[in-house]
Image (cartoon, rainbow, N blue to C red; front, top):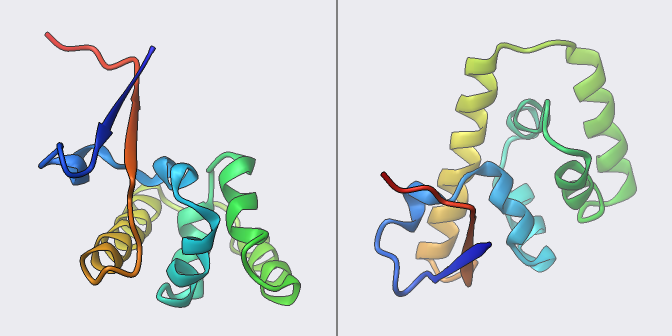
Length: 117
C-alpha cells in the first residue's frame, strides 16, 4: 500500500523526502541537481545506493562525466557512513533550494507502508 501526499497538502514533506526518493523526481531535474553539486559530494553520496538511483544520475550526464564519476567512486574505496549521510544531506538541501526557486518541482512524495503508533 502506498500513500501519496501532494506537496501542497503536506507541510513537512521535507522531513519525509529522503535521498532514495530522488528516484521519483523527473529525469529533467537531475542535470540541474548535478550542475549544482560538487562532483566529489555526488560521488560520496552515491556510494552504497541502489543501481537504479546511480543509473538515474549516470544517464542524465554526458558519458565522459559519468565515466569519471564511476572511476572516482571506485578509486575512493570505502567511505564512512557519516560522510555519506553528510553528502546526501547536501544534495537534499540543493534539491529543496532548487524547488524554492521554482527550478524543480517535487510533485508527489510517495511514502510506502507507513506505520503509525
